[in-house]
Image (tube, rainbow, N blue to C red):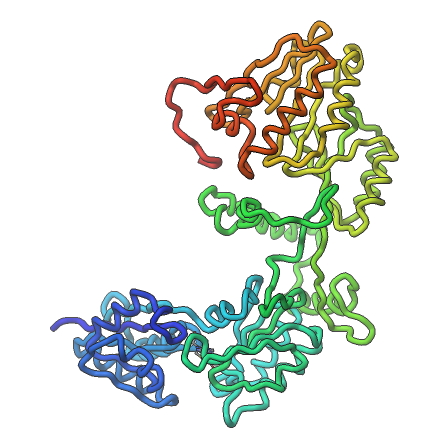
Length: 554
Ligand code: SAH
């Protein structure tokens, strides 16, 4: 006899456009479709099945049992759920019925769970982007779950600043739960917290209400509503609810706030889960955990905290830490404001590579507990610290004699150390270039290398623009590709340039690149594309042997 099959199909919010192709295929292949009456009506137009069994809402167990029986008799059966069948849907129940019968994948009937768009996603899409950050779903139905458990979950989610999508918020008889949920949430979240009430998303009777935590109960909430409650940084914008991605925004000198650039959002730091998987860097995180665990094994170190102790510790932090929120009026309030991280570069100077102990101390004091310093290949420290007073920070550091510069897509001037002053003649030119051009915004980071003699030992010819001082004049190189398997030096374009002409020529080259390059286009790529910068023609400097592209990590 032919073996039967059960599809457990999530058909999405309920309209034709938001059901997956696999779900439609499954329904069309099925001999029987079984589901709650209203749902069956929603998908009826998609199928011409011989048997459609619609049952009442509370008959889920018998529906699942019936489906298993039919599949065991050799039929193909679809059990349907709205949204996703694995989110308060039929998937778990079908497996439970199968398990009771001793089913196993190798010997029993075939089971395929077809994923669908759950209410948290369909409702979020209609509200704007309220979910975005860490979120959870909580069903307020205490039909199968004790209220004491639900209550704890609301409390925990509220405390941890999760965005929350409440499913099954209210029904004719069940009205108390949503009011209780609001009461618990108000202990931790501001009354102004944005709340979206979406009824019957993507169905004919769709209704969307934007309200606040304080006022949400004044609106109609029913069985077909999903209540989406924002976190402490969620905001309203033009009839939308938006939760920002993360709690940090970086800015640098001359920029009050971070401008979001599409390519920046795709950096590895911004999308670690998406990009790290293939490079194997995800392993590092794992190692970190192992390292922490190892540490706790040593006899001197603190004993491991139990999860209860950790939870208590977290609660006390929420209560007492003014940075997290909490005030006398409401000690539990979680208010995680967007943190502004000021990011800039520090170096001892253009023509100086020596940092004094005093300067180090001053820098360390300014950074305190929350700042970080990173040493970079271009002889600078990239400094990050949360502050709303960048001027003050810059003032203190500059007073110590250190040079402070912006980071990001700007002109970065790097000079050699002029053999500690022996070849000091050209230092004023390097300083002038830094003063006039350093930090100017560019389509992409632009490195200008300045070397004080023909040795060019600080590798000026491997910068985007290389300047070499030789016999009281300058040689100019442009368009290197400093890294990668097709790396090459810059192309010499001028020899013996008079010192008085250097700055204006550099200014013109940089202006040409700034005005005409595509956003995010590196200098060498731009030169290669346009073939000419000012009157300098591009020559192909790449290796003539075909070299395969090798992205980072391969
Ligand atoms: N499996 C479903 C959830 C079933 S529980 C899913 O993944 O979406 C039923 C609850 O889901 C409802 O009380 C409501 O809160 C939510 N819900 C389901 N469909 C919805 C829709 N179209 N619009 C708004 N909320 C919906």
